[in-house]
Image (cartoon, rainbow over all chains, first blue to last red):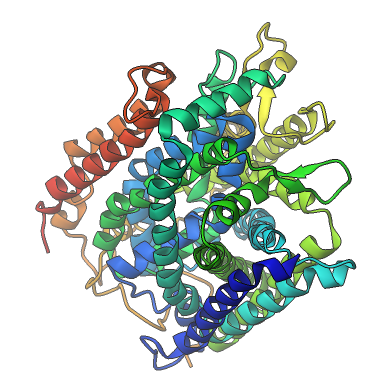
Length: 549
Length: 80
């Protein structure tokens, strides 16, 4: 019952109202002369320094859903769930050099989205459209999942109702407020709120990580309890350590997820909003602080086992919702005022990425669909306006996904999202280094990678589900005599690359036109202070002609 | 393919900024955390943590050190 959680609800509500106020005030923070430009609304003026970028990108990559789902995975499967740690370690050295090149070329040409870059680099609006749609489709379920994070907290506070609408009313209200201040303040809102969100999360986790083991008898006891649970369970893949059959899955999932993360449009939004190349490079060293946090949060899953937390029932009869274990652990172990703070940290933690993701999706629509196909002569102010409205539509869509569909559907889609966003790797990530691939080859590779990825995901079954039961594909199904599994995304992107290369060779032999590279070699090294790296509205020589107002 | 631009002449120092042998160091924190043989074991334990957990958390330090090192070593070349 919610009455037992009154203190928690009051603290949660107060902190929520505080950040909502900040969201509206953010429009005046580092205020621009003219907000009616995508560089201002969608990229916060392209002028964020090291600290803001750290909070913004950190708040964006390490979402509320991550903080709820990773410990839930560790709670359910053990060591496998810890893949999030190597994943978020290898990513930074991996993209260290790539992102600065993308930053430079984007600032010279005024690119706002990865698809903008692809359009100019490969002279292909079609390829850009493919990249944009992939980005939007991969981002949408991610936004919906942030709601799952908030819902886990609301459930633990007993804020539930009988009817569908009553049960979801708090989320609808929360998202309406979020939509309003994102509409008004753009990227400045999540950037400002991220300070509060991350401070709260760091406080909560530091307390949890020292206080809970002390209460639960020390780390040795916590791991022993987890070990005992997995020994008793009949599932073959779980355990405190990996076994011979899931090591390949662990490594390919960590590596594949790392490759995918910065292909998500919302990750790039934070990167492109930074002031110069140095800010990005310094952040590649500073962002792993969040990985440490994530690793410690993952271990909350074992603490929940040691504390004998029983997850609340799921949406359908007979299932359990493992996502509720962290909120329940806090509720059981902490005094209620601190639980309120912890819940607020998760709830606000959902708002920051949801805002950035909706902005990124809106920018993709505006730049690569609206401006490319619907209204080629759109002015900067019209672009900003379309993006603002699209961000509202995107959020309504995300709420509708959660309210009217089984949340499991969003989780499935997000699983698919990781695989499909990886299919933009050849065009976006490799495109930053080479123009060797033919534009039609890249489209062909994308089609092949998508097709194979979907087929593989469809084939994966578990005792409870026939299809889409995870991303671990048994190699047995390819005809190998083994029990090993592999991450679908890696296989799909390798096939994608292979097809792209073969089609490129064929088209080059047939002398099919390749278009003109809109970027120059030197663009990839430009930095702040470069005469052609201009802040604010610019006359863009390379993109479609744009009337200079 | 790249057309020289009369407005902004490419500067050699700007180009040198990206290229450095030190960049190869970045491969260490990409490859090492992805070798299960290193971390997939129970002993030795540290503060009650099996090796699987403390070693992978320690890899964060490896990553931070390497990226910081590469940043510092490559920064001075062609300084603005």
